[in-house]
Image (cartoon, rainbow, N blue to C red):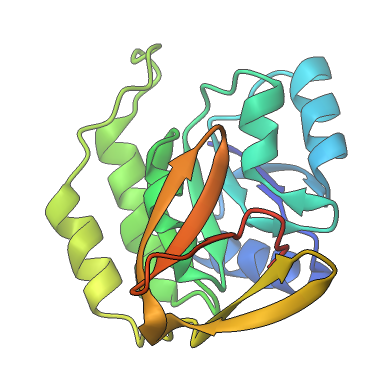
Length: 192
Protein backbone atom coordinates (compact mmCIF):
# COMPACT_ATOMS: atom_id res chain seq x y z
CA UNK A 1 0.00 0.00 0.00
CA UNK A 2 1.43 3.39 -1.05
CA UNK A 3 0.43 6.20 1.33
CA UNK A 4 0.69 9.98 1.05
CA UNK A 5 0.33 12.19 4.14
CA UNK A 6 -0.72 15.82 3.79
CA UNK A 7 -0.27 17.43 7.21
CA UNK A 8 1.23 20.81 8.13
CA UNK A 9 2.10 19.86 11.72
CA UNK A 10 5.27 17.77 11.68
CA UNK A 11 4.65 16.13 15.10
CA UNK A 12 1.18 15.04 13.96
CA UNK A 13 2.58 13.67 10.68
CA UNK A 14 5.37 11.82 12.51
CA UNK A 15 2.88 10.30 14.97
CA UNK A 16 0.65 9.14 12.12
CA UNK A 17 3.61 7.48 10.37
CA UNK A 18 4.58 5.73 13.64
CA UNK A 19 1.02 4.43 14.11
CA UNK A 20 0.83 3.28 10.51
CA UNK A 21 4.25 1.59 10.70
CA UNK A 22 3.16 -0.31 13.78
CA UNK A 23 0.00 -1.68 12.17
CA UNK A 24 1.13 -1.76 8.52
CA UNK A 25 4.92 -2.13 8.34
CA UNK A 26 4.69 -3.11 4.66
CA UNK A 27 3.28 0.30 3.66
CA UNK A 28 5.35 2.67 1.52
CA UNK A 29 5.23 6.40 2.21
CA UNK A 30 5.64 9.34 -0.07
CA UNK A 31 7.03 12.58 1.33
CA UNK A 32 4.90 14.55 3.77
CA UNK A 33 3.22 17.56 2.16
CA UNK A 34 2.20 20.58 4.23
CA UNK A 35 0.21 22.94 1.99
CA UNK A 36 -2.54 23.10 -0.62
CA UNK A 37 -0.12 24.43 -3.23
CA UNK A 38 2.38 21.62 -2.62
CA UNK A 39 -0.37 19.00 -2.68
CA UNK A 40 -1.77 20.20 -6.01
CA UNK A 41 1.72 20.24 -7.48
CA UNK A 42 2.47 16.77 -6.09
CA UNK A 43 -0.71 15.22 -7.52
CA UNK A 44 0.00 16.76 -10.92
CA UNK A 45 3.56 15.43 -11.09
CA UNK A 46 3.61 12.07 -9.29
CA UNK A 47 1.97 8.67 -9.56
CA UNK A 48 -1.16 8.54 -7.45
CA UNK A 49 -0.94 6.84 -4.06
CA UNK A 50 -3.30 4.05 -3.02
CA UNK A 51 -4.51 6.12 -0.07
CA UNK A 52 -3.80 9.48 1.47
CA UNK A 53 -4.29 11.01 4.88
CA UNK A 54 -5.34 14.64 4.82
CA UNK A 55 -5.48 17.27 7.53
CA UNK A 56 -8.30 19.73 6.86
CA UNK A 57 -6.64 22.89 8.17
CA UNK A 58 -3.35 23.38 6.31
CA UNK A 59 -0.89 26.27 6.47
CA UNK A 60 -2.42 27.99 3.42
CA UNK A 61 -6.12 27.22 3.95
CA UNK A 62 -8.68 24.42 4.08
CA UNK A 63 -7.59 21.29 2.22
CA UNK A 64 -10.93 21.14 0.37
CA UNK A 65 -9.29 23.64 -2.01
CA UNK A 66 -7.14 20.79 -3.36
CA UNK A 67 -10.27 19.09 -4.70
CA UNK A 68 -11.45 22.35 -6.28
CA UNK A 69 -8.18 22.83 -8.15
CA UNK A 70 -7.60 19.29 -9.43
CA UNK A 71 -9.50 16.04 -9.77
CA UNK A 72 -8.38 13.61 -7.07
CA UNK A 73 -9.76 10.09 -7.29
CA UNK A 74 -7.53 8.61 -4.59
CA UNK A 75 -9.36 7.53 -1.43
CA UNK A 76 -8.72 9.80 1.53
CA UNK A 77 -8.87 9.49 5.31
CA UNK A 78 -9.31 12.91 6.90
CA UNK A 79 -7.38 13.52 10.12
CA UNK A 80 -8.32 16.71 11.92
CA UNK A 81 -9.08 18.34 15.24
CA UNK A 82 -12.34 19.79 13.86
CA UNK A 83 -15.53 17.75 13.64
CA UNK A 84 -17.54 20.48 11.87
CA UNK A 85 -16.12 19.51 8.47
CA UNK A 86 -17.28 15.87 8.52
CA UNK A 87 -20.23 16.29 6.15
CA UNK A 88 -18.12 18.17 3.59
CA UNK A 89 -15.36 15.56 3.89
CA UNK A 90 -17.73 12.72 3.05
CA UNK A 91 -18.82 14.50 -0.15
CA UNK A 92 -15.33 13.72 -1.46
CA UNK A 93 -13.49 10.36 -1.79
CA UNK A 94 -13.50 9.96 1.96
CA UNK A 95 -13.03 6.57 3.58
CA UNK A 96 -13.16 7.87 7.14
CA UNK A 97 -12.88 10.97 9.32
CA UNK A 98 -10.51 10.65 12.29
CA UNK A 99 -10.33 13.22 15.05
CA UNK A 100 -6.98 14.17 16.54
CA UNK A 101 -5.34 12.88 18.56
CA UNK A 102 -5.81 9.79 16.45
CA UNK A 103 -6.83 6.72 18.38
CA UNK A 104 -4.82 3.68 17.15
CA UNK A 105 -7.96 1.51 17.11
CA UNK A 106 -9.85 4.09 15.03
CA UNK A 107 -6.92 4.23 12.62
CA UNK A 108 -6.88 0.45 12.28
CA UNK A 109 -10.64 0.41 11.63
CA UNK A 110 -10.25 3.13 8.99
CA UNK A 111 -7.51 1.16 7.20
CA UNK A 112 -9.62 -2.01 7.32
CA UNK A 113 -12.56 -0.05 5.93
CA UNK A 114 -10.31 1.20 3.12
CA UNK A 115 -9.14 -2.35 2.38
CA UNK A 116 -12.68 -3.72 2.30
CA UNK A 117 -14.00 -0.97 -0.03
CA UNK A 118 -11.06 -0.51 -2.38
CA UNK A 119 -8.93 -2.96 -4.25
CA UNK A 120 -6.34 -2.79 -7.02
CA UNK A 121 -8.99 -3.82 -9.54
CA UNK A 122 -11.46 -1.14 -8.43
CA UNK A 123 -10.42 1.71 -10.71
CA UNK A 124 -13.49 3.86 -10.04
CA UNK A 125 -12.80 4.02 -6.26
CA UNK A 126 -16.48 4.09 -5.40
CA UNK A 127 -17.45 3.62 -1.77
CA UNK A 128 -20.59 2.40 -0.06
CA UNK A 129 -21.16 5.27 2.31
CA UNK A 130 -22.83 4.52 5.63
CA UNK A 131 -24.76 7.60 6.81
CA UNK A 132 -25.61 5.88 10.11
CA UNK A 133 -21.89 5.58 10.85
CA UNK A 134 -21.42 9.30 10.16
CA UNK A 135 -24.35 10.15 12.43
CA UNK A 136 -22.84 8.00 15.20
CA UNK A 137 -19.49 9.75 14.75
CA UNK A 138 -21.03 13.19 15.00
CA UNK A 139 -23.30 12.37 17.94
CA UNK A 140 -20.51 10.71 19.92
CA UNK A 141 -18.36 13.84 19.98
CA UNK A 142 -18.47 16.50 22.65
CA UNK A 143 -19.96 19.21 20.52
CA UNK A 144 -19.26 22.84 21.13
CA UNK A 145 -21.29 25.35 19.20
CA UNK A 146 -20.70 28.98 18.41
CA UNK A 147 -22.27 31.27 20.98
CA UNK A 148 -22.31 34.25 18.63
CA UNK A 149 -21.59 35.34 15.08
CA UNK A 150 -19.63 38.48 14.36
CA UNK A 151 -21.09 40.48 11.48
CA UNK A 152 -20.14 43.72 9.79
CA UNK A 153 -22.79 46.44 9.55
CA UNK A 154 -21.39 49.37 7.57
CA UNK A 155 -18.15 50.33 9.32
CA UNK A 156 -19.16 48.68 12.60
CA UNK A 157 -18.83 45.14 13.86
CA UNK A 158 -21.63 43.56 15.87
CA UNK A 159 -21.84 40.25 17.74
CA UNK A 160 -25.16 38.44 17.22
CA UNK A 161 -25.86 35.81 19.90
CA UNK A 162 -26.67 32.44 18.31
CA UNK A 163 -29.88 32.17 20.34
CA UNK A 164 -31.18 35.29 18.53
CA UNK A 165 -30.70 33.77 15.06
CA UNK A 166 -33.86 32.26 13.61
CA UNK A 167 -32.22 30.69 10.54
CA UNK A 168 -29.48 30.95 7.91
CA UNK A 169 -29.98 31.23 4.18
CA UNK A 170 -27.96 31.71 0.99
CA UNK A 171 -28.67 34.23 -1.71
CA UNK A 172 -26.49 35.32 -4.63
CA UNK A 173 -23.56 33.19 -3.40
CA UNK A 174 -23.64 34.86 0.03
CA UNK A 175 -24.75 33.47 3.39
CA UNK A 176 -27.02 35.42 5.71
CA UNK A 177 -28.31 34.98 9.25
CA UNK A 178 -31.80 36.27 10.00
CA UNK A 179 -32.81 37.09 13.55
CA UNK A 180 -36.25 36.59 15.06
CA UNK A 181 -37.09 40.25 14.33
CA UNK A 182 -36.66 39.66 10.59
CA UNK A 183 -33.34 41.49 10.24
CA UNK A 184 -30.74 39.81 7.99
CA UNK A 185 -26.96 39.95 8.44
CA UNK A 186 -24.28 39.00 5.93
CA UNK A 187 -21.94 36.47 7.56
CA UNK A 188 -19.82 35.30 4.58
CA UNK A 189 -16.96 37.69 5.16
CA UNK A 190 -15.95 36.06 8.46
CA UNK A 191 -12.81 33.93 8.50
CA UNK A 192 -12.98 31.32 11.24
